[in-house]
Image (cartoon, rainbow, N blue to C red; front, side, top):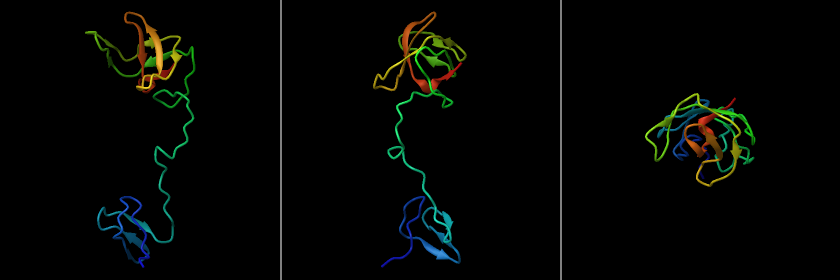
Length: 121
């Protein structure tokens, strides 16, 4: 029966010990035998809080004012939304395609945005 642990980085079963450390020959990862390494939770294991957050992790709410943080191309238009454009009175919703902000932008009209491209003002 094998007593060596799997590599926490690549999950290889071919680990070996060298003094007080475990070594993985496949990825080169080394870790101490005296401590147990905690692997971070995956996206499926993370709790889902259904809170819409901006690019910096701040929670957004209906009626907030946001600023666009990246130049965005607009489908069907030859112009783009410039970084720094302020958007007032947003409305949050779930479109299912990643767009979760509904708003009106001067010069463009009504459109949907992804929260990862805005920051709360």
